[in-house]
Length: 218
Image (cartoon, rainbow, N blue to C red; front, top):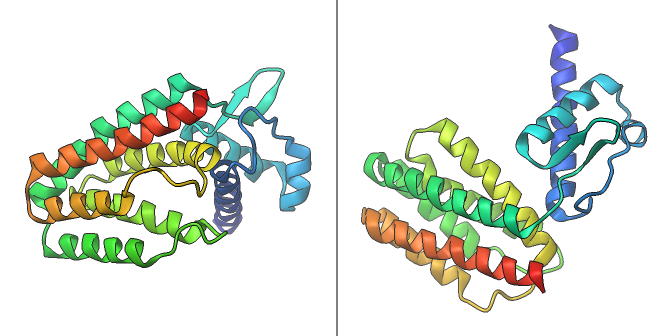
């Protein structure tokens, strides 16, 4: 069991490193991934590396083609539109379930995540703390649903859209008060107003999707 456990640990580390590099845009869309070079950089054997690549393919961040190998999944307006539509469908489903089933601990987690997001500086040259707080807030909204598989899909879609945000928005102003949008979503959710919370979440997701489409097609 020990060798398998070590292999899984190595694979998970590689997945985390590559996912972060892809989402940040350090590895460009369509860029070929050289396994030999990556193996040397990560100081691992080929086995955990291939396992990591398979997981990233399943997550939609890496593509594999016969004769060409692995590459970072390309970006496109069509792909972004699909991600946005799926986020709307799945996150509103999860949010409604969370509002119906979530307890006081869930409300506390939502408000705690909102406070952390509100007090984390954005655009300070290091986007990762704000991005982490942003992701945590959106996932905290959904955890009360008690549906781990649905939460997994929602987190996966967020990761896919975060890559577009890193490439096409970065620290650029969104032209809207995003924090006020977060405040409004949290208030409606913790106030148990499912219709209002869902409509605010939809508007929030679609506004980001529309802005990304504009930047992508510019």
